[in-house]
Length: 575
Ligand code: ATP
Ligand code: MG
Ligand code: MG
Image (cartoon, rainbow, N blue to C red):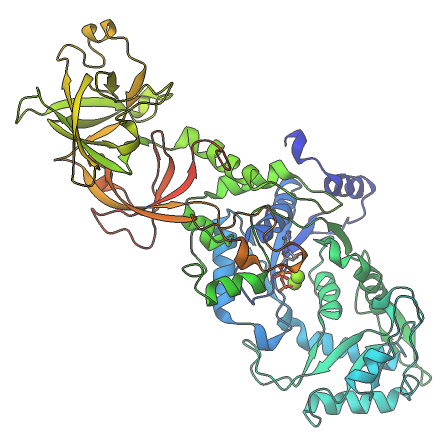
């Protein structure tokens, strides 16, 4: 891999491999996981985590699990499970290896997690607290002040066990009891002040149905799920740094055994080596928001056209926009992995798409803001075939063919009545080359009552056709694109731009709706070169001079594509 992809996580893995930290029979030395909560759509930030976890597994002959962190029954749904699986696969990764699907759900571990919790009670590491949620919050203390022990902290294990079993049986209402780890109410780390590990929730779960009346907390479930799946390097974002001591504490407790007064030996649920948690900086992208809550707001308030609106940073959105899996992987490689938070310019993402598409995308002609060009000296019914390469750098990809006729469509901005300084395109008396066609000289124009130009007139030079000997005699500075009026495919084209005009749309809790870019979507009726009638949904082209465009995967019809602008040819933002 390239130098840019070397990072501190690779250094840790390489050192572990050297030391043989995770030398276990029949198991790879690197097992990572991507653990989404199925409560929304994945976005570009998740893509960073996916590329990181699956990428490390790939590069070190390991494997990466997809695990749904589904411990929060009220917010989760099968619909999200399906779209998340789809997005991971679309990005080019697989949780399948050697015929085994490493697709897991935290809810698959609910029975085991429960047994472990009973053990923790018996071992004196957990207790049922009868304080109200308010009392628990109050007695937790603050950063400057130690917490206070719960009056129930030292209740006998047998009493906690009985209450815990009755919590499970559904005897108590939500919020009446919790199970807490018994650690240290004076710890400077708030997460170590007897964190809650189980709560009562009389809620239906999308996979376990109504089986459970209690649900384990994320901080309890996550490390144990990692250990049960033999994860080696558990990679998460920086905000979990303060949770790491509990991650280690719980795994240590569950790998010990204890001897009870009656002589029974219990415990030993987990074997060493245990997984380790490492934190990296989450992706913050300029001109973008990635908070699930705020993205939901954009959808609900109909500021965008749904989760897969091409302006959304969701995977389903950027896919519709024309982003390729390779461009996202390239982006993630370029931005690397850091240990401290920072901002990545969205231009880096757009640049990755351009760099991925430039060698791939066939070229095509599209007139987005059309005005008619009439070649007055062109014979009425003549059709002259013109050709141009599908890709200028790869002649082996062949030629596109399209006719030139008396009436054409050209871009409105390629004509000026009174040219500004340095303008080399059409104006009365000036000559330009019609790309891949003839040199023409502008002779005049028509206007309507309002003064709008309705047609531009010119004459052509029959011996000036591109690729012919005579053409070299014509030296012109302007070179404009066009399509035959008779042969053009009329199509809806959506000119998307950044959704926000402000580089930090939701900084300091300001209202991101005030930062919207009013020009983030312009819909035009465009004229395309005839061959584009055959474009299939998802096909990507470079429209010469305009940018990269994808045939929309949702709205294109056979013979009638709808195009989305993925990105312009150059970064002209703010210029
Ligand atoms: P929630 O608010 O629901 O917790 P979340 O963005 O953390 O939202 P998860 O489904 O928990 O969503 O995320 C799955 C994984 O993706 C986690 O490991 C998380 O660290 C990672 N992740 C989420 N957002 C980003 C981001 N902006 N950059 C990098 N990784 C991210
Ligand atoms: Mg989360
Ligand atoms: Mg989160």
